[in-house]
Length: 50
Image (cartoon, rainbow, N blue to C red; front, side):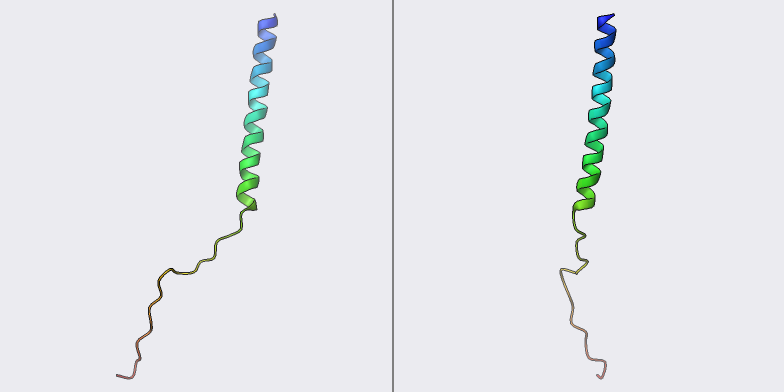
């Protein structure tokens, strides 16, 4: 019976650790600020008069 109890506790601990890790990753992803959408290369607009 002790092996069954140890296996059940191991499964419960692994599940709790997986849920905690998932919640931690989600919290980290939401904590990062959004990157500005600025282009790396800009082109000059040609004059339309010619």
